[in-house]
Image 1 (tube, rainbow, N blue to C red):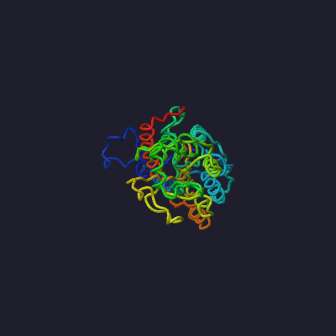
Image 2: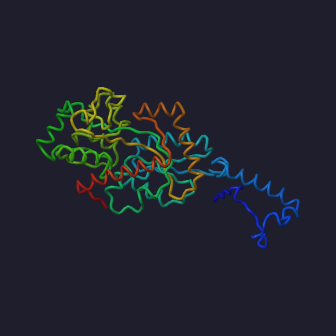
Length: 358
């Protein structure tokens, strides 16, 4: 739907043959046609109402049917968790069902491709995460632009990654882990959520900043990566706070370091990577929502308002916080800028590590 907004102050109707006349030399069209002035007044009022209509009124009827929310990772991970939580709450006030669909592959890239090529009508959305810019940095044949192919809506949450080992691991601290990695380059194995995933890229970034080398072992999603850690297949895993913290609390795994700039509130005894001596190290992931580029602004405005409302609901906020997230919305422009910055950062890491995936 197209919305045309016209300013009443710019609406002028002029007879061609009077274009150059002195206004005082003729009674004018309005004076000769008394009803004309009244028509102009009514028209100006109508135009003003159109200009200042609320965003949701400029997209009348939206939504009128089910909305699809795609997420690009296997079931059981943080992305699916956030997608289902937002879909349930936003569907209440949108008065339509939001169906969450998993389309795993290319560390979220396949879901992003499907949304980028979808009709920009507000009925196909993407639950996007911090893996999105990392994926864009390593996959060379993506069929979409990681920034320009999307209409950004808002973030919902931010969270760090936790570097974990099994509870029976010989590594009692992050310093011990790194010392072992230095002494045997490429021997310690790190389970990741897939090639090009943000957990993979964090491992590469650690290696570049410290001169160590880990053996990256990709799995289909971080839940499987954690399962393989527990079965003894790998030495460590870099997992989202939502997945790792419950396992830390239960004593199944041991947290060695947090990738944020500050200690995380749920595990305050665990140091940051920067505290261990790797200065200025920071990787914070996030979750949010996007639509195909070209989606009408009134629809984006409506979805933005609904997402902001949803994460302000006490039950939703407390659920996200309990899962290890900081709840925070952004404007569409702020979210776009965030993606742009992180694409540039991960491209530098991928280039230095010579990572190129098809």
